[in-house]
Length: 88
Image (cartoon, rainbow, N blue to C red):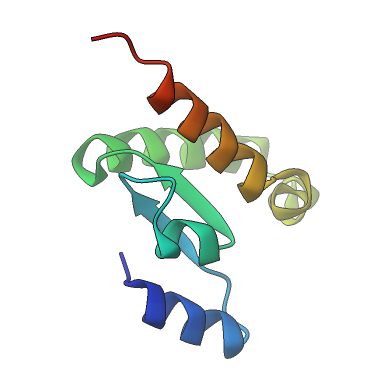
């Protein structure tokens, strides 16, 4: 979990940034390479399960192709749309 300035600094230094953020509109969410829009407490167990599934596949190309197949912009737009259509 980083703030927007730190996220940008990490990107500029060549790091790949994955963040968990409640808001798809935050600067951190928009700056990261991969944003998980969720609560960190709920997210971590689910993320661990997904990582274990990928490990079982044991194909290095699966790991390497993940960032290429992932569109952070698309995910953030979908999350924003979901937030705007919630009926209360």
